[in-house]
Length: 371
Image (cartoon, rainbow, N blue to C red; front, top):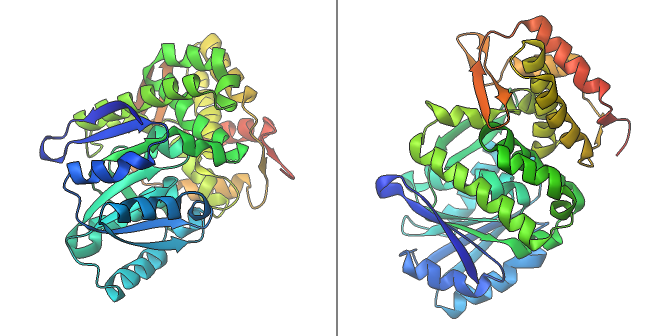
């Protein structure tokens, strides 16, 4: 049942975000309402398929949609040109034409990959975001940033391509392992720091309820994050202005992911760790008060985050930062907190301070020898 609608206002590219519970039975009528083509290909991974693929296919077929599926392995390493090309090949072999639609059924990796394929296939086909993880429901499914990774950097090859609509069923979170809930909290905390002090305070008070997937608490933070992402996307679709602030925690975070070969650290975990390092930078530069710095760090410490060390070393993280796309004119661009609900974009951080922030992060003991 659809319980909430949030609109992303982008003129002719505008679209709604539908949020609710037990929503499968409403999916096909919503597709019909939005004029989605009858030929639909659901793309998902082997973690998601056993839970949701068959019921969604049967539901769509009941409404006379011509449905097929592509199931790929899970994980960030699937966000590659090689995997995208394999999907292109399968679509072409199946004679999937321009008047078709792709459904991204899964987490952020599936959403980014399928959106990238949709943007390029036949120079653009309809696609729908059906996020199933907390991280993708609160952030990555909204906004139209789609991409694949390159060995030299994360999300280096991509586009801005908006979905027909976003379909968020809170019930999907029930099948997630605890690690995925932690990942979602990375983006949720980020929104509280950059835009909404009240949301941050709500997370401080209700963290345990969110971790336990209390419906009311999850719906509250999920809806608030989507509202903010929708508003920012409407103002700055292509990240030339305010949308840059969504990268808080990501300059260091993306480097952590790359240094771990996109297998050691998941995106939401990397964002949490990135916020620790970047808030340290802000404190050392005198941008944020000791009290706010401590509140941010204290909240992140309460989240059950532990990452195995694997290939993560200070040298590898620093090397990965050299290839980050947030480097502008040779300068590292950071989004740093000023107070809760406000950040600034800074490109004057000294390399020695970046190094110190990473040493500080590793000293936090979030990176361990084993999970």
